[in-house]
Length: 203
Length: 205
Image 1 (cartoon, helix red, strand yellow):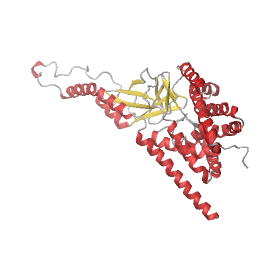
Image 2: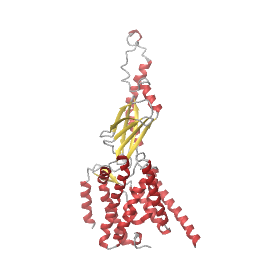
Image 3: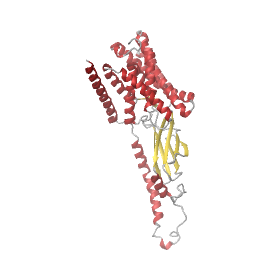
Image 4: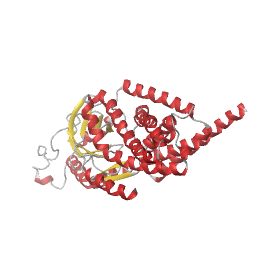
């Protein structure tokens, strides 16, 4: 899910960076004193998640956790993911500094979208929470793959093929993420439901 | 609920056995032996890049040659031009890595293998038999140039496994220090954010 340096053209990098900056600004504006600890924790979780390799047959995939980050942080997912990606680029050379904006958009954009789509469902009934959380984890990675395909479209010019390829190869991640998100959210909803914000109930 | 999910998870894990690596980084390493450039492409967890595309560019960004990596992620080619080289590996889905050789490195290698003017020259040792060889009287005095070439070839051969070992040592994944360092940074930033927000709150009150 991390785009390397030197693949994307300047305009794609710039527009990605601009959108990521806008998202981060919204996120920072919403970041209040109570949310800082949560944002930091989830940023750290996201930072480490990429190192957790799940063996899938001959190859391995790694967790992304952007669904759960989005569900628990809303717009604050942007700064959280931006910081984690910066550190990943610096320490592990995943992605790169020039692709930071695009990569942030790829992972934080779907996080926010899924937050608006699935957080209300998680708050509805107990029966809905588990499938909604699964959908959130699954959908976030799916949307990431679509955005990544769109970013690559300008260099590879075959949007459908590239996107289908990315989605196919990330299917195991989507399922694993869905399951991880479902367990975490159902647990948190029982133990401390206030940790999961609801986009429509707040003022 | 848990009882139902684990079989499903295992089923999916089996189903998607053939899916591709979704690594986050791809690295290519190159080294020169004689007049040949060897490259090896890997993901950070040590998996080789199969059928990745290798592109070789010169200093001006002109594409010199392309190739596909083998099962072991290897690809080798004769030095095409005596200038700086940039080797790019494209593993698809936005994964790309590169390795650079400076002009000096290439020229040194080309100079050692043949004349610097024509780097991809043929095997240097079976050159024209030098006068020293057809004069049996002067046999104990070998031509120093020929000797040097022979030594170079021999050393290349002997050093090959060591070069490989060094290449393999270079491609380590993130270390524990990196991971804890990163977490430390996040905690530090968290503290800073909390500090500034608390100052702001104090100012309001």
